[in-house]
Length: 68
Image (cartoon, rainbow, N blue to C red; front, side, top):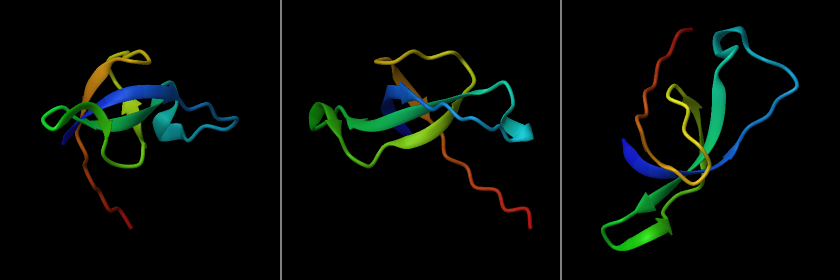
């Protein structure tokens, strides 16, 4: 889990059924403890369940599921 800032939105010409109707956002992690707004990692893509806009700070929870 980390704090991030929305820096963009992902657009695609094809959709995966599981993600149909959901927005995908580009999130850049920030480290407010040492330097407010400083990027820590490469941007990640996240599904947006709440309607965040570009520039807003968000909390990103990372989960891993493996269905083989």
